Image 1 (cartoon, rainbow, N blue to C red):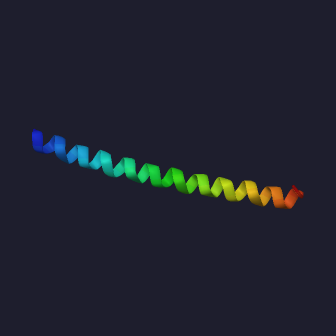
Image 2: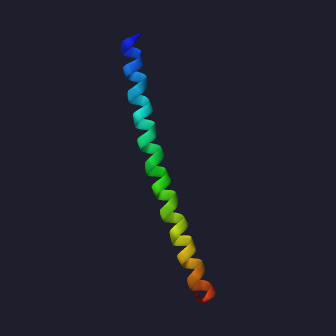
Length: 43
């Protein structure tokens, strides 16, 4: 049972890292879109 807990914890850690990375990518895309929109509208 303890081995399974360790395996699941490792999987949770991996998924949390992946989620963090995806959130960072999403934020960068949103920032790019905001900047592009500002350029297009002349601000």
